Length: 378
Image 1 (cartoon, rainbow, N blue to C red):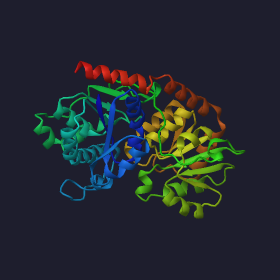
Image 2: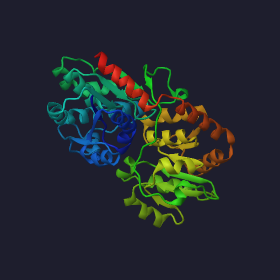
Image 3: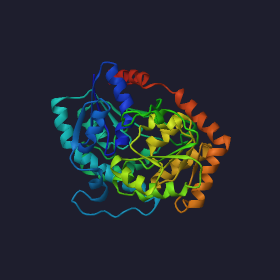
Image 4: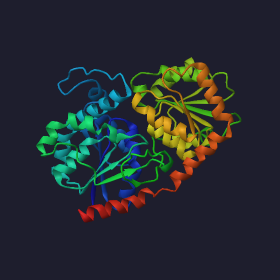
């Protein structure tokens, strides 16, 4: 069976799909993964064949309409959901020519798209093959569908459709304890950490004498040059007697190390470092949050964008995190929250419950069997 996975414009979207794609290839299926051109090296880094489907970076689709005109930035969380749906829709439209060319030369039997990889739905409908949607994280991606459908009206009209096609199967990686009540029916799957690697150093996989705190904003905020978020968070933590690890891109690490003496900074494999940590502080990135949940580590979540707030709050409501809403991330707030997460046992106990929930879900290899059955029935 030929399976085409479609990621998006950030490394996290590649890493989220990599475990299922790898399991499918290990089961003997031929697997390709498509994404924006600058994401193909990340696909290759996972050992999977990568196909560029559009040349532009994610910033182009997020800031300009199809004609190249600047778009109005969102002001409320609801507007952010619609804003995301529209620009992911523009990305899907721009990806279709390359995907159709690929399909002429290498016709997939099944298309698997990430949470907001709307091109997967369009391509599967065009080819008449099953469409599987896989969650990238614990967010509620389906809430962006209406706005994406509006953006993609020209493409949908060509297919004789008024709305985006529903997936034949939704694969969800959200732990049961965090799934919202209105979430669509899904095939659950155990989430496996996947991220860029580098040569390991002993400190990465051993605990030190002091509590270890990992601080990260993922790659998207750093690429948007919002490094102040990292710098300010670490400065707020200075009074704590803790080892601070700033997980960030190497190109900004040197600057951060100069500004923050004594802090480890650089690209680190989170799947290795987080299990040796006592706290993870982040921007509400889905892959980062799941990496912490998988390791049973408490989290301090400082959402950078309204569309991240709800997912962050669910982890906090479960008792495995503290979420600081916009305007609450003062030095005093950050220190108080970090101290509580490091010293109050209930946070680690609840984080451990999430880790056990994740471990009990069906493996990616088991889900490959479901994909095989879906294709056989189609």
